Each structure stands twice: as C-alpha cells, then as structure tokens.
Length: 109
Image 1 (cartoon, rainbow, N blue to C red):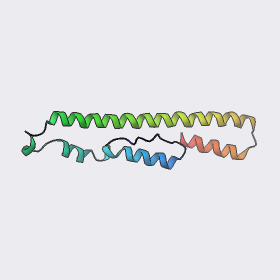
Image 2: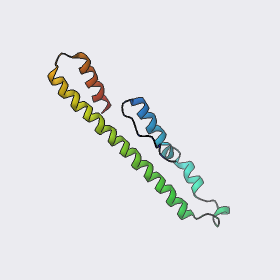
Image 3: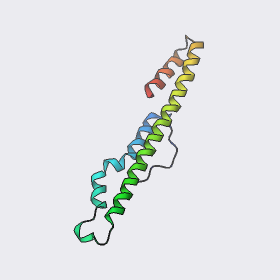
Image 4: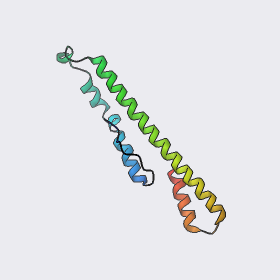
C-alpha cells in the first residue's frame, strides 16, 4: 500500500478527506494484511516471517508518517490563510464576503 504520490491539496476539503481515506486503507485492512503476511504452517519454510513482518511494519510506519506530514502541511497552509484573512479583516471590517471566507478557513483548521 503505497501513499499517493500527488501532492496534497488543502483547498478542497472533500478532496483532502478522500486522500486521507485512501491513505488509511492499509490500516483499515490490517487483519487481511496480517493474514497474508504471516505464513501458514505449509509455507513456513518458503517465507521468512520475520522479514515479511518487518516489511509490513515499515509499510505501516511509512503510511503513518506520510499521513502525518500531509495533515501538518495542510494545517500550516490553512493557518497561514487564516492569518492573512484576519489581517485583511482588520482593514475591512464591513466586508461580509471576507468574513465568510475567514470563517470557512477557520472551520477547516
């Protein structure tokens, strides 16, 4: 289960949620992954269970690291947008569209 190679876009929240859902596939299928990784009695001599478990562990850790990186990146991006919108809001107190955009971005964070 490799992570998607495309850079994460935080602008479309639904798209971001879908990306996270896809990246969680390995976690959601962990029982299946374990069942296919750990050899049955008839395959013990043909497969190195230590190596296959190590590969599964590394795959899980990579998936978790990638998800964490993408989430933190989106939080940073959205926080930056919120900061900019707050500064603009200070200058234009009566701009309703700006207030709506600010609230939308704050909700994302």
